[in-house]
Length: 426
Image (cartoon, rainbow, N blue to C red):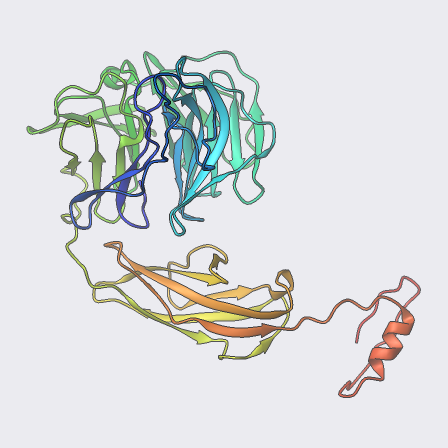
């Protein structure tokens, strides 16, 4: 679920079936389906033969069965893909990691450091509390830190079934995975020992016994909501470990035999669950009786936004330069993302007044361009007019003689002496 644009993103194929590596989206804002980008041409299929490569000739990933290894990272507006069963004659497995940058429409091979999970079938889920992605193979739990581009192994465990789907309860800080008769959870709160625990529930056998069920967390009712075919949706209260159900007519029928995974996902903007069950069926939206909410938005009016600080052409320095913006919308602004030279700076600010403190010491001296992007709940976006500033951070003083020279420079008001450890101030 691309929560920034309120759409469900679909990618896959591979193994010995489909070889196109393009992405598709089901858009709740205007109730349409789009192909996001074009497939690589040629694909990995060449005249009846192909090889198990992870990267195609144009530098994009080979298509693959993704299983439960897709996650959207709202903090950086990228989709993360880990491994999968490659598009080739024997459907070989992989443990590469890719991100797709929706802002630039480009793939990036991440080549992370740390303990990278071996080629396997994975479950994964994005943790909104930490901005990291938890990943589980057939044995162990890992965490991926995008900022550090690093995997860390958290637990050595015994084997689990691989027909599982994962979801995170961000309130109770639990990584939950279930399917094919198994249900497990990990405590992922700070200081956890990351010990896998058996999740004992009542009333949810239809979900736990399903292969790759659809699982999503609903923040409105504070429960995990699941689907595995038919007209019944299951809700799990992790305080009582009891499942309850809601049943309606008009569903898509039986679940696809290859599983649902995160093609059942929750839309915070519309407070509905999106479902794509099969490529030969329509897409579906489902709203719980207990969830309330409003129908998918038809709002097409984008926000307005302008930068208010710093001033155009200003010379700035230091670790705490204020960058601020004014943003308004006919319905309401849900977030403002500040950018420097087109790259996100900090997390999206979701509460007015919209402001960040920019550490200019991490930027090179010289001219830089500031901008900000405002979005509303319907997914409409507006980018502010850009603003140019000059960063001028003086280099550190390197020696007593350098200190003396700079003390004598025109415009210096006061000098503070140096000590035997060569720490200087001016």
